[in-house]
Length: 352
Picture 1 (cartoon, rainbow, N blue to C red):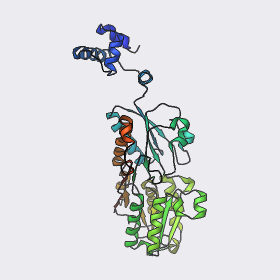
Picture 2 (cartoon, rainbow, N blue to C red):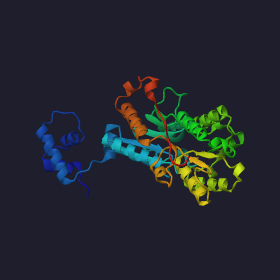
Picture 3 (tube, rainbow, N blue to C red):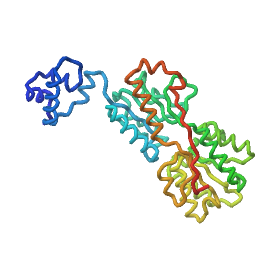
Picture 4 (cartoon, one colour):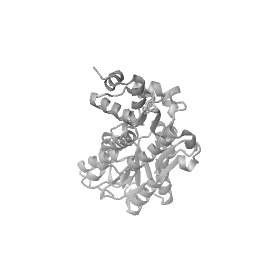
C-alpha cells in the first residue's frame, strides 16, 4: 500500500496538519528541526505526495499543458524535451498534447480538453486560439503561443522566429547561386489546402515564408511554382513522393531548386531525387527549414534556415512562468516584451 501522510505523522509523532504544512511548504511557526525531522521520515518511508489532492487544496495543479503539432518532426521532439526539462526544474509537470498531423487538429484530438492545468505552451499558427481547441476550459487560461508571429494580437504572449526574414534569405541565396535561372525557376513545397492551391495565393499558405519567397522572386523576375504536399502531410513520405514526381519531369520543366516547408520534407525530396539518379545540387537544389539534426547527416548536409526549438522554448517558458507567478506584473508588459521575435539565420550546406 502507498505511504500516506497519516503514516508519516504517526512515525514522526506529530499531527497530520503539521506534516501537511511541512510537506506542502505552508508558511508556519514550525521549528526548523521539526521540519527537517518530518522530511527525513517522509523520505525514509518512501512517501510520494498525491498531486491531485494537493491541487484541489491549493487551487493549482503545478502542471503545464504543452500542445505541439505531432512528433513525427524532430523539431517538435526537441521542443517537447526542452519544455519538460525547463518546467520540471521550475517545479511543474508537463501534460503533452500532440496532434498526430495537420489534419488531426487539437480540436479533434485534444487530450488536454477538460484536464486541469495552470497554463499552456501552444504551438500555433497566427490564427489559432487556445479557446478554439479547449472550449470554455481555455478561457482565461495563461497561454504562451509558439511558432508564428501574431502582430494582430498585441495583447497575446508569443515567441516566434522571423519566418519572413529567414525565407527571404533563402530565396536570395538560391537566386544568387543561379538556381532560379535553371529549368522553370524555383519551387516552394508545403502543406497547401485545396482552396489555397486553387487560389494560388502564397499569402494564404504559411504566410510569412510564402510571402517572402514570392516577394524575392518578383524582385528578380524569377518564376515561382507552388507545389502542395500530398495529403497536406509534412512528412518524409510526402516529400519523397513529390521528389519522385519532380525527377520524372523533363529537364526544362523541372525547377532549378525546391524550398521545402521543413527539413523533414526536404530529406524525403532529397532521397527521392538521389535514388532517381539526379545530382543534388547540380541537377536540382534542395533546401529546408528548421536546421534539425537529421538534416546535418545527409550525404550532403542540407541547406536550411535555423530556427532552433531550444531558444524559442526557453523564452516561452520564461514568459509563461512570469504569467503564472506574477500575473499582475505580466499583464503590464508592453507588446514588445509580450511578442518576442527571434532571428532566423541561413545555414548553407551542400544541397544548394
